[in-house]
Image 1 (spheres, rainbow, N blue to C red):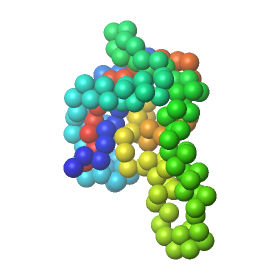
Image 2 (tube, one colour):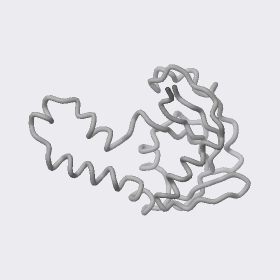
Image 3 (spheres, rainbow, N blue to C red):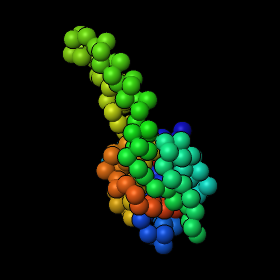
Image 4 (spheres, rainbow, N blue to C red):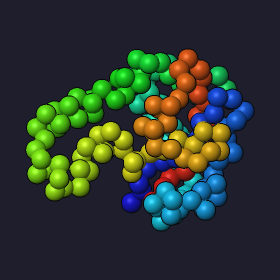
Length: 148
C-alpha cells in the first residue's frame, strides 16, 4: 500500500521533470518507507486540486504551477485547526499523560502523507513545506514518486 506521493516542485519552470525514484533510494529509512516507485506525473492533478481548493492560484505555462497566498495557507489548515481547538478543549490530563497523542500531532502535521521535494532537496511533508513556502511566486510541479 502506498504511503503517499513525493511531488517535485521548483520556482523555475525548467527546474522540474528530472526527479525519479532513484533520487530517494538512500532515504528509505529516513522517510520510513520500504521502497519508492515512479508515479504518473498526472498524479499532480490531485495536489493541484488541493491547492485550488485552498484558493491558491493554479495555472499553466509550459508546465503547471500554483501560487500560494497567506489566505491559501490558512484555508489549507483551517479544518484541522478547528479540529485541534475542539480536541484541546476536551483534553484531559489522563489523555495527555497516558496516550501517544498521535491525534494532536497529526492535526498539526501529517507526517505520514504526501511530501514536497523542492529543487531536489530532501522531501518535507506538505504541511511543513507549505508553512515555510514563500507567497506570491509560481511553484511549478513536475514528476511524482510514490512512497510505499
